[in-house]
Length: 263
Image 1 (cartoon, helix red, strand yellow):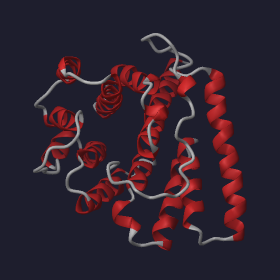
Image 2 (image 1 turned 90 degrees about the horizontal axis):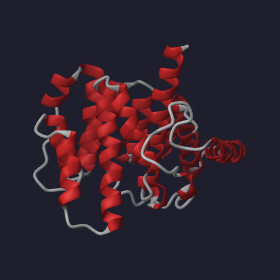
Image 3 (image 1 turned 60 degrees about the vertical axis):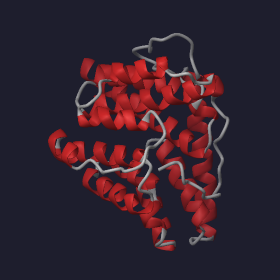
Image 4 (image 1 turned 30 degrees about the vertical axis):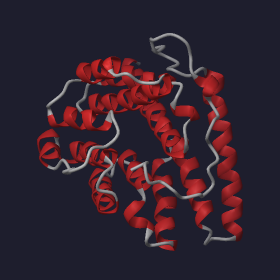
């Protein structure tokens, strides 16, 4: 889904947070993969975007960019229903966006509207029938909505190869590959350091999300923390940056839930 993201609307988050990566392989059980000051910097940045875009929307309520930017800010702050509302407004202003609006699908997923999220990714498949990342999100949405069996039965079919590790993650969902085999394949591959880090970012993200929908929060947090600490995600383009926030937010949601259980 990120391959063909070619909108030029307000790409405001490209290289920030390279310094957000903490050292070591383990996640602090309380603070998570980012330091408190780094989490605060994210909060302050997007709260400011929220204020600025809201002020501008009050002056011009039909500006697509403003709703896009505010929707992103809401999402990055964990305001998922509000993000959906702004992304919905984008499709109201520009109906052709409905098919390709993958961010809306992800926001619907985190707003716990899993059937609607699955429908969004189903529509996206008519827009791009190559990128398995869309099929990955449809599977995750269907898993939440209907369970693993139906989600596996509903895996979208792809005739062409896509970027690794997405085909391998797809095999994981189909029950044809294990997480260990995915990471072993990355270890064996002859890759540049940048390409290896990129594959590890997506592998940890989607292996972590898969563990989460299967109810294994401990392993989910481990992999989502590693995706958050990955050095490629924060410095990559808009789409990967958005996905970096997805991993960050999901790990935080799981950690907060675990802390509540322990109280």
